[in-house]
Image (cartoon, rainbow, N blue to C red):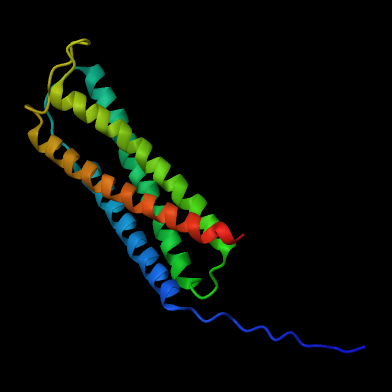
Length: 175
């Protein structure tokens, strides 16, 4: 009976793998930075003017949800960036599958917060004649400008997370 040793060598990364890794790192940095910036801008945006209690509660709830969604996405994206950086030499299809699930959940979370913030932002900017809500951005100009910047940053984060989701899904197909 012969004993054979397995001659298994680690596959050397080619230029495409290096490019994919660099793209993943850059997109994760962009998603992390824009989610953090969006959360920071909305957390620090405040302007005091007397409005109805109902409208104040609605604005507060939806923008708080938007801010916390971005803050959570920032935290988890930062963790995935560290994991990607430290595990870059041992990336397998299974690890990319977990990146796919992570990116999909973070994109969904940020997108849901963004949808809520965008809808309430539109009502604040344009008003709603059917419900009797008046425009408030003419009285909260500074606040509305900060909300607009935060929304734009969050849209960038969603696009980065979408591209990361597609890339991770493609890499995980080898399971």
